[in-house]
Image 1: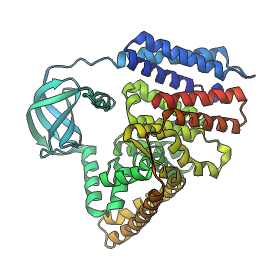
Image 2 (image 1 turned 30 degrees about the vertical axis):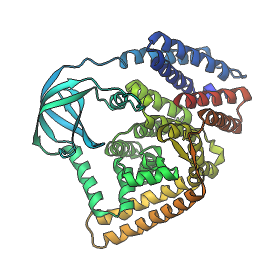
Image 3 (image 1 turned 120 degrees about the vertical axis):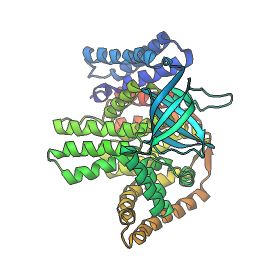
Image 4 (image 1 turned 90 degrees about the vertical axis):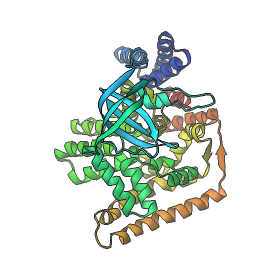
Amino acid sequence: MTFLARAPLLPVLAAWSFSLVVFDLTASCLAALAGALLAVVGLLCLGGMSRERPWPALALAIIGLSLAGPVLFCFRLAAPSLPSFVSGEGKVLLERSWGGRRLVVVDVSELRLVSFVPARRTVAAGSRLDLEGKVLPLRGPRDGETFDFSRWARARGIIGEFSPSRWDLLSGGSGWHRWRGALEERLLLNLPPLVRGHLLAAWLGLRDPDLAESHRRWGTAHLLAVSGFHVGLVAAAVLVLTGSRREGLVLPSLALWAYVLLAGAAASALRAALMIQLYLVGRRLGRPGGGINAVALAGLLLLAWRPWWFWDVGWRLSMTAALTLAALPENLGARSFLLAGPAVWLTTAPLSAGTFGAVPLAGLVLNLAALPLFGLLLPLASVAALPALWGWAGGPIVATFAEDLFAFWAWAADGVVRFVPALVAPSALLFSAAFFVFFLLLFRKVGLPSPAALGGATSLALFCSLLS
């Protein structure tokens, strides 16, 4: 079976990614279109060099989808038309700290706008406000900055900045936001620090700064980002309870998307939820499909919805990690699960270094145990936290048991970090080469012809190189 027959959407994803890189460099729709065509034709030639050549119809469909991306991006990436002034009732969609101020996202006059307010002016998500003020374009990166706030905002549906001249509270938090805020408050007030920090991340997608810094030092920061690991645990738990009954599609789907909304609907969570939803539908139809193709489809849907996700580090890390995990061959059995952590560390190292400036080499060691260990720790901590959250007598004692387990992990991880130095600014070229060899070996492991293996490895290495 050729690589194209196994993952026909992977060349489309690579072509879309390449077109976005070209568009970013040239601001030319024609250049982006040419870049996509060049990428997809090259991959089609590589993927078709075997005895089982792809059907002409399949090749044409892949080329057509690849060219549809740049055309869509030219319209989607255009600057929005903004009014100069808005007034009326608005709803707070998000509120979080941002440096020494608070970042507040409001929906007013059917526009999603962001406002920066003093730290003392706190307002709960879900609150209704009477607003009036100017609307400004989103600011780009300032001199010397690498972070582009406008792209971060557009990836979250924000189209402008709101400078209020009137800001009056009409009512407090309500609906879904109120329940989410109440759960956050209970976690903060009733649980010990390590359990609280890990459950804030796993349940609500919130980061405890001290805990985030510890995981960054250990090379296991991906455990705090709601992704396929966390979403998969939720879906698996519901699947175990419902089995193969009719509810085996309905209830896991409802639980899946409810959890993603509760956790903040980050790019990594959306990608994972889309993949699992595709798997659930495919299983119901008797056609579960391939893992790599499912990752590619989820990535394409997210880019079609909001192409700004491409420049979001969370989306990039999530997609690279998902492609890595999906490429692990099924016939490795339990060994593939043991290799998952180090493989993800290897392929995401260039992105992590570009964002944080260093990659802890200790992560290569610690990730051998991190995924299987936290696959047990997080469900156990979630159950152990319930008595304390419900206010039962003895609840804090049960939560302390989970706290001790997290403390033991922290002690062991710190011990490894003392003996293994950080790898500062690793070469993206070096890791892309390792990425290439890694997937080449995996494709050969499942018995694909050598040219097809080369095509699959090349396309994935190209994707990693573009993201780096």
